[in-house]
Image 1 (cartoon, rainbow, N blue to C red):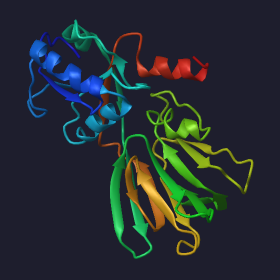
Image 2 (image 1 turned 120 degrees about the vertical axis):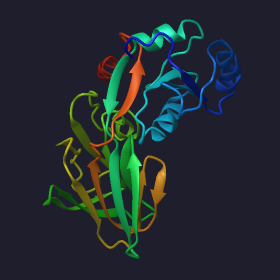
Image 3 (image 1 turned 45 degrees about the horizontal axis):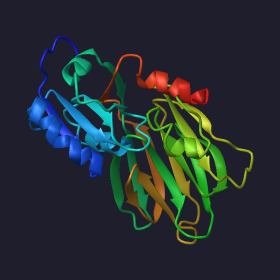
Length: 258
C-alpha cells in the first residue's frame, strides 16, 4: 500500500451471518468511511464479497482487501480483527483487467457487460449448443458441439473455469483461458490458451432452434446470436494480499493439489 499509516477504510460485509456479526466490531475498532472517501475497501465474506466489491471499483480502481468469512475464500486473506492497518500497509498487490462482453441477441439488440471471472455461454434447453469460434478475426473452429464455452481471466481461472477442467493461470501470465463445457464434438478438444489482448467472437449456429445464454460473471443475457469478448485494458482492478499469501502463491499451490 505504501507509507499510509492509517488508511481510511470502508468495510463491506456479505449477507453471511459471520460477516454481518464481524462488521460492527471492526467498524468500532477502525471506523467507517464511505467508499468514495476511503483509501481501501475491506470486504468480508467469501469470494463473492470480493467480486461484489471489485465490481464497484471499475471507475475508481481503489484496492480491495478481503477477509475470509465464507467457505472457499480463494481471493481472501485470513480473517483476523487485530492488526488490520499493519496488514493493509504490508499487503502485496495483484492487478487484473476485466473482460468486456458485447452480446447481440436474436432480435438484434446489443448488451454490454464487464466480467471479472469469466464470460460464459451455455445452452438454455436440452438441445446442445453449436458454436463457431473466431479469434482475432480468424475462424479457429467452424462448429463446436457442447454445453457451452467460457473465456476466463487469470483471477477467474480457479472458479467456474477450473470446474470445467480448464487450466489454472498465474495472475501475471497475460493469458486468457478458452475452455469448453462438456464438449461433444470434437470430443477431445480441451480448449486453448490465448494472449491477454486476444479478441474472441463466438457465433451461435441456429440460435432459435438451439438457444444459448451468455453471462458476464452473474449478468445473464438470453437468446444470443453472437458474443465478442476482449480484456478492457483501460480498467485495472487491484486486490491486496498478505505477504506470502498472494494470489500467485495460492494459484501455484492449487496446481500442485494443496
